[in-house]
Length: 223
Image (cartoon, one colour):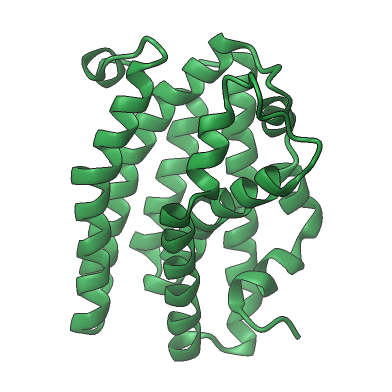
């Protein structure tokens, strides 16, 4: 049996995980062939996504059953609002997007579907449900970053998206992903039962499919 809960959740619906991590958007990032308009559309929506992500971790603090769990969730809120968003805004500026313009963007349907799903999981369930819904993004981006960086087929020289790949393959982001893995495992040890795993896997699967839809939204410039 895989040693951590994340690997077990991935293994429950492997086709959906491959469709997400191997999406055409990701493959085109690796090749440097993704249309710049698609990447800018993705970046703008990702900014709006981060706002809801902060709300999700604030909800995790409310749902926490211990001070240590609460502190971890609050640290995530602080990290998103005061560090990650600033870095994202700076990165987006290099692509001709400023914060005021991104704030004024209408949410794409894929952004709304994904973020509301995550928040609903947290409101209807407990912390484990919420972190399972967050995991495909937080941990998945780390997996995508390291996979692309290690793949000899990934074009780095002259690739306008090389910095994006490097960002998610970096030690800093891998630390974030490992922290999320540990948190998911900790919550699983406290609350997961064999009867509950199937429902948790369905939550993880739906979040994974919504991640793939988010890539597709960027790829096709979907509103």
